Length: 302
Picture 1 (cartoon, rainbow, N blue to C red):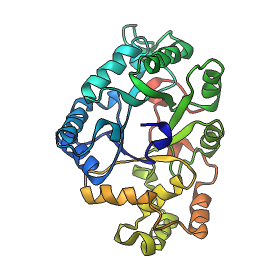
Picture 2: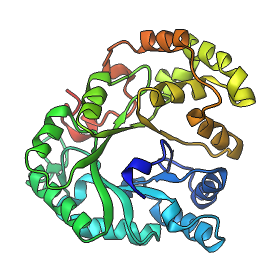
Picture 3: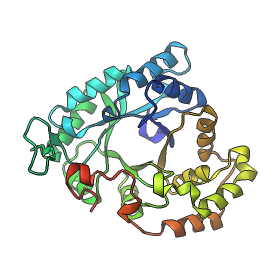
């Protein structure tokens, strides 16, 4: 599927309940999801692949109907092709529509850990990894390549030598952590922005914010019973020309989330302004859900 046709609302496979992955992803496809977001590090690509195989066998969809994304984990920088082929085999999908470098640094698990017990960084520059990613496109193993969690400087560096364009940057974005400057810059460069954790979580559970509750209630006229703070949060991101990754194990909620990208309703200018006011330009790391700085031993997001 062309990147221009990448569905704006994706179904994410991160932290799906063990033992339920195949059924949940199958139900998501049944509900209408055509963009499925996966990654080797999620540890469930075999089960996701079983869901695809089941959907294909039942003629629910064809391979061409789906937009499938996977990601190169930080420990696989020295074996890009092998990692990609492993994901394709696990997912039973012939090729990937999108393959991302999951983190802006790689790790070498074969090297001794440092004095702080952190895994050693791989002595592999990003330009070599990007060249290996480009070879996957040339070999027709994937249609598009991109990055995740990369800064504007890291993307700008790749742009100086890239032969194949950076298709997207997958970022954590939600009203409590808007990442606006980076996201808007990516769009200005023709790099699509895909938001993970668009509803926040834990202490940054954005759907509890008054602005989103009011926006959700205001959406009832167009979205009906599906109207909710969650739907408002998704639409807020979509209205900024971002894509969003959703997740649910409930088939009805799966369907409801798809209504975020529906012409039958919209956020009012007042509700949009209220959510924007919550978001502001804050980049307070206290509101970031996926913060790997401690795990990696590096201030990745500064």
